[in-house]
Length: 540
Image (cartoon, rainbow, N blue to C red; front, top):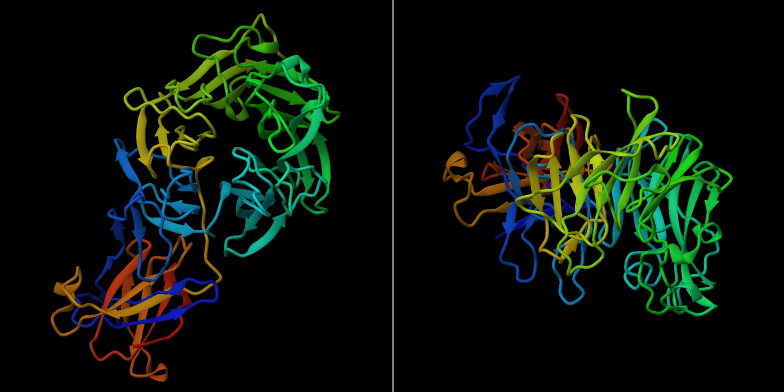
């Protein structure tokens, strides 16, 4: 097989080409609409790996989702996951990267390889961005399961890195760990105040006699930090160790030292709420509202209800993630507080993790205790997630649950019925800290990728192309969201390129046929009826 490619500086193969030759098309504005096909391969026989997608024009290998869809009433948007390998003994996912996919299993964008966390779309002022955490330094993530030290990357709608938030708090890290930046994996929430909320984990000493340890034991102090995105300086820092007793923890104490501190609080989400901060503690089973002076205004406890009074039936929660407050438009005195309620802390437990929403009256009044709004879990196929996870409302009233350390994503309707579910790795073998479904529109700054090769056997385009040509083009443009097709140019030299026709975009990578005597090929991505970016010229 002969293959001709053009390579980009970013390391991606250049892969565009249309479908011509004897292909059937209708004349339109002086050119032909050429036949084309989706050319991805589903690799399911690569030992040790969950099935993944592969392409000729790109070396990205996203997971092939095992999807069960029971309804058309899904929310619009694209899926955001940061796929990680959870197995310590064998490889289980082909590529650890942030991925954007459609809910019909098509890749949109594959990001840089390596550990990432909390991959999502956000707004920085009026700029739509994608953001994610990435570890920096030796053992900045893997040696400290459930924590990390690194930076948050901001990509704009052209996939240009426009900002890296590298927090520097002069932290003490566990022995054997080094890092260039101090932001933790758990939170990276951009606020409307031109700030970003970050978690950070500091190693320090504390009196642990109340939990069975020594007077000078070692603990993690998980810190809430708000950083001004203009100055890159912290404008708010809150330490739970300065305000709460260690023996409030539900985390069993075994031992602690400078290499493995006791994680008594484990902060995993922060939200700005007016001039206050909603701070969630997994290991206390509590969520706190804190003012700018650092005072605790109120707290809710997953077993007792805390300041709010007794929790309703099925409204208890434990080991919870992603605490989020929302206003209730129907009652200005009430708010909705939602959680991904893990309800277990061990991989051997089988309690189903739930999407729990409580209706709260503010200020807290035990005489008017919380009411249960949602208690979502898949009764037919329950998932037990011992760590991580997300529960987010969608614009059409549905909600999306990402199951953290279990490789599942599910979309529920407002009544708790599962409309769509997907698995992206083997159970206990792959994970995504959170999962989101969001709107995203992007036009990459780099060129589309084009590969031209000669088919050695019949393929999906053989009938269309006819026996006279086995020459094929393969085009993809990693991250492009609004491309409707590609114009195909061919000729005997770069100077003689002429328009052969236009192909419809067929998934992430589109395959098309070329006349047998083609010597030079180039394609141009078409958006809103006009060519927006050309590939490099490929010589056959």
